[in-house]
Structures are given as structure tokens and as C-alpha cells.
Figure (cartoon, each protein chain N blue to C red):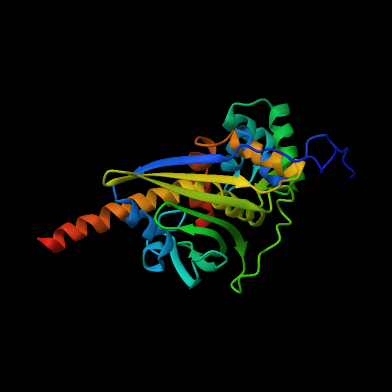
Length: 170
Length: 117
């Protein structure tokens, strides 16, 4: 098995049409006072940005707190910030100091993932495309990403609702 | 006991990607069950239950202990929580976050309309 081969991995793409002008959508992705109101993965979570330098080469650190009190920290490194059309960043699980956490539990999960947000103006609406792709994955990482893809849209979201509720009681 | 290496890498993520194993974890959430009890609840045969339990045990998502003549199984919540974090970080994370973005944008714009009135 060669790891020198450049692996092509199809990105995951989520498209949404939003009832808001493009500049506002872009602001919602790049201004802390907006981000804190929506950048959380589940209802009941709170989101707090402790630092934010949303510029090319800059980074932000935010804390997600689950209803049960469990906390997660996420570090975001921004690669490109092109108002009001696109935003490119990498996001990592981190600790509260912003140190990226190694992932011993998931050895094959891609270590580097790039997200690209593309905004297209449709009159006073906006079409958003979120493109999510591993960067230079090893063969094993590409396989893990592909394995997760087969579950897109069905399994993870719905199937884990009950689990999530259970975990919150622990 | 040493286990033969299979060709498939069973990391926890792959282990729970299989819908039957997710169902099994949900059945075990918050309670201990024997293979027999699981088979009855799920309507599966015992070999199927044992096969999936074996995979989940191998990646540490399920633990077992002996109780009398039986072996009972339960979810390893610590390991499961770690997986949940990764799942949250991935697909569900973005799908749900975009839902919240949409709701938020709708909310602040209807506030603006109110402010102007």
C-alpha cells in the first residue's frame, strides 16, 4: 500500500438557500456577535468565542457548552476571507488554550479538513455552499471519510438523537 | 485473548457506521442486557447479536461482565461520548449549525422590520 499516491477524495457538499442578503450571511460567518448566536451543533448548546481574528492567516477559538455542562473547544484557522463571496478555513478540536487535540480514539479520521463557504447572491436571497474535504489524506483517512459519507443525511442525525439525549443524562 | 487481525480496520467510527450496531447501542443505553435479552428485544438471532456485540466490544464501545450463568453487556459511555464529539464535529455539526444560521438570519431580519415600524 503506497501512501505517496495523491488521493482524490470527493468533498462533501451541503447547499442551502437562505432568506437573507449575501452581505448579511457573510457577516454572520465572520463577526463574533453573529457567530455566537448560531455556531453550535445542537439546540441547547451555548457558543462563546474567546478569541477571533477572522482574517487570512488568523484564527478563532470558541467554546461549545452542552446542556449537561460538557464543554468542547474548537480552533478555526482562516485561510481566505473574501467578502462577501467566500471563506476558507480549517477547524480542529482543541483544548481551552487552543492546542489542537490528538485523536487517539479515531486513528483513521482525517487530521486536516478544509471547509469552503461559497455565497451566491440570488436577489435578496443567498445560496450557500459548504464544501468539506480532507486535505492530503492517507489511504486509511480517505477510507474513513468515505465510510462516513455513506451515512450522510440518514443515520448520524436521526439515529443519534436518542443517544444524544441519553449522553446528556450521564 | 489475542484476536486475529481482520482486513477491515475496526476503529470505533467504522464500528458504529453500521446501522444494526447503532441500534444495538441504543438498546443498551442505560441498561445491562444478556445476549438472550437483546435477541428478544431486537428480534435478531443470537449469532447476529454476538457478532455485532463482538465488534463493539473490540473497539471498547461495549463492556461485559459475568452475572451468574450469564454474561451481561452495557455501553461504555466514556468511549461513546468521544465518538459523539467526532460525529458532532462532522456531518451533524454542519447540518445543524446551518439550520441555526437560517433561523438566526430569519429572526434578526424580522426584528429589523419591527424596529423600522
